[in-house]
Length: 279
Length: 288
Image 1 (cartoon, rainbow over the protein chains, first blue to last red):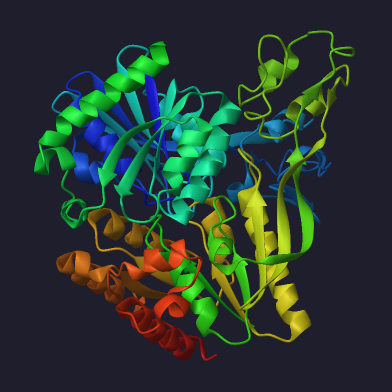
Image 2: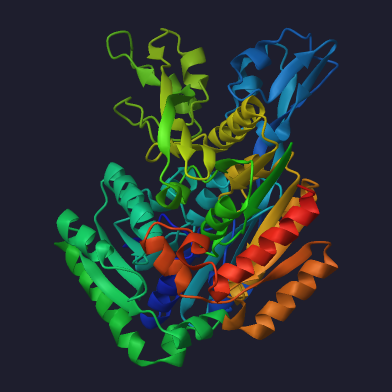
C-alpha cells in the first residue's frame, strides 16, 4: 500500500506525520521523502545513508560539424530550449524538458543526448525502516523527474509512505499519483482551510480516497472541522497545539520519542487508513 | 522600480502574514501574490477584482480515434508514459511536448491549448494587487509567476508607483526561480527549527546562485534561541543581512482569523511592533 502525505499549505506538519507514522509501524516500512525542493524527513529519521546517486535528465548536444541549420529542432521544441541564431544552434539546457523531440527530428543525426544534473537520490536505513529522499540541485527548476526517481524505490509489498511537497501543482501530483490513499495534513486557520480545499480538489481529480490530520488543533478556529464534515473527509487524527510539541520539533525530535503515548495513536491512524482502503 | 520578494524555502514560516503587514505599512506600492499554487494573501487583503484574465499554458495531446490507425508510435515515443494501451492520453501525465503530435503518421493527434489558470488585477484597501490562481493539478506555475510579476510592474508604471511587494512561493524549484529573477532583494523568513535552518540555507544559496541580494528575519525566534542564533550566524556569514526577529505571538493567528493584518489587528502587540521595525529596516535597505 502507498500512503501519500500532502497538505496544500506548507509547514502544516506533513513531515511530522510521515516520520512519526513510519517509525511507529515497525520493520518493513519504506519512507520516501518526495519534497525534493526542501527535504526534511532525514533530519528526524537520521538514517545511515548507504547509497548516493546523481540523477540526470537527457538534454540535447549539437554536433556543429553535422548541423545544417535547418531549424527543425527549434520548430519541434515547445519550450524554446533550442534555437537557431545566425550561424549557430544554441541549446538552453535549463529550459529543456527532455522530450527527445529534437534528437529524433534532426535529419542530419547531429543531435545526441547528454545529461543535466537534477540532484541526488540518497537511500539508507534506520533499524527496519528503509529511507529514500531526493535533493534538488540549487538552481534546478524541475522537481517532478527527481520525484519520479525517488518513487522508483517503491515496492509492491509492504507499506510505502510518501512525504509530498506543498502546493497543488505538478510536483505534488507527481508525489500523489498512483497512491492508494492521500493523508492531508492541515492546521485550523483560514490559510490552512483555503489550501486544504485546493488539496482536496487535486486528490479528487486523481480519484484517490483521502483523510485528514488536523495539526495544531485549538490554534485558530473550527472552520476546518466544519468543512471536513460537510465534504465527507474523515478526520483521522488531531494533534493539539502545544508549545512543548513545537519545541521538540524545533530540535529535530520525533513526537513518538518524546511522548511515547503517541506511538499507539499513529498505529491506530494506520489501522483506520487500511480500513478505508480495503473497504 | 524596486521589487522585494518574500521567500522562505520551508512553507508555513509566516511569509504571507509578514507580507500582509507590509501591505498596511508601505506607501505607494503594488502587491503581487506569486504563490500561484496555494495563494493566501487575498484572504487578508480581500481584493475587489477589477480585471480577470485566463492564463493559457501549453498544448495537451488528444488522439482522434477516427483518424488513428493504432500504429502505437505515439506510445513508443512518449517519455511521460502518458499514452495508455487503449491509446488514450492521460492529460495529467501529458507534458505538452508535442512529440507525438509531430510524428503521428496519420496526423491524428490534436494539440489544443490548455487554460491552466486565471490572473487578476484588483483593488485592495492597501492599493492595487495582482494575483493568480493555477487551476487544480495544472502545470506552468513558473510562467504564471513571471506573468503576475510582469503585470505587477505594468500596473505600477501606469499608476506612477515605484515599489512592488511580492509574496513568493515555498521551495527552491521552478515557481521560486521565476519569482526572484531581477528582484531588487529577497527577504527570507526563517523559522528556528532544524527543518527551518536546513531549508533557509538552501534558499540563501538559491538567492546567491541568481545573484539577488538577500535580507532575512527569524520568525517565532523565541521557540528555540539556539537555532535562532545558528541561523543568524549562517545568514551573516553568507552575506544575507539580518533585519530582525519576530516573537511567537498568537495575535498573528487571531488577526488572520479576523481577516486583518497584524498591524490592523493590534499594531502595539509584540508581533506588530517587530514587523514594523523590520519594515523600517527593509525601507532603509531598498532606499524607498
